[in-house]
Image (tube, rainbow, N blue to C red):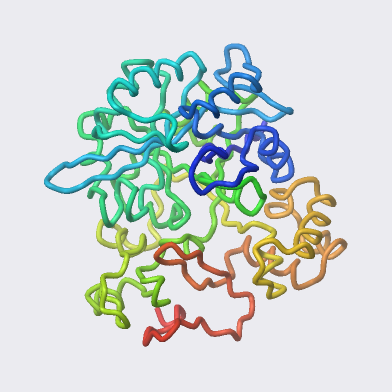
Length: 420
């Protein structure tokens, strides 16, 4: 059985999230997307935990829960804020639990350490990353911790602003309890394979979604090959780096992510690392410090050349949400376009779910239900034939389906992406 799992998302009780991010609506959109396992998100928030306790049905001895024929894993994101090596550290972690009873213990223990549970969906606390891992593992060895979006400048454990130079520097003697890392939207496995230290961890991908729509939910995901959904078997596969049970990950092109290139969004400036270094990471327009992007940060830590593939590498598929493919092909600038949604829904209805469209639908089948340009775009994304205007400093990247279109940068003397 293929298990399509998006394990990192948020609830409607978190800041800057859609009010539609509740269990009922998420389960409906999971089916549309083609996901059969979701993380609950925000399980330490009192109202979200109440929803979890009220609505989710436990699956006996499996460590998972169920609602509307969709499986749920109890997950949340936690933030630690502290000083280490005379530097402010802000690190996000994904935490997974096999039971509600264990969640109650987590809340009790961390609350006594000063953590808040009701301000945001994401629990925040002034303790170190190793101390968090130690406290959680003392509660239960079945709790699992994943460093979240490890390359994000401000909250990734390897991020350019508040991060460390290695996973071991972040988790110290508790690194033995870390078996996987989340790569985030702005990097993909090919980038992470260049850092030999990361061979020790399974590279996981999740959406970190703040809304339930198919162009956010499941845009990155993990595919497991198991007899049935099972919390313990999933984590055994991860701990053992079992390539037979971890089939592949679903990725977006890293240029799509909001922090791939170095740049300054206020001035509309983005740069490849080589150009940013020439500029000493200073915006050529306003002369302020630019946000160092994931690609540049990775170049600082990489100890392998581009193209290196570890023997233990898990495959991946590079996709883009169907709504965004249609929107960019048709030149729509609207976030919610009724016509784009109608076209998306028509295609999904024909094939059963969106991931089936993006992963398996062939050209001849696609043109039975949509036009040739959209069909070609779906295939081109799948085959990684599309270039992107790269994301930077909190701004999403955009695919360029018009081969003659130049990548423009507002008022910037920077070269185009094709020059690098």
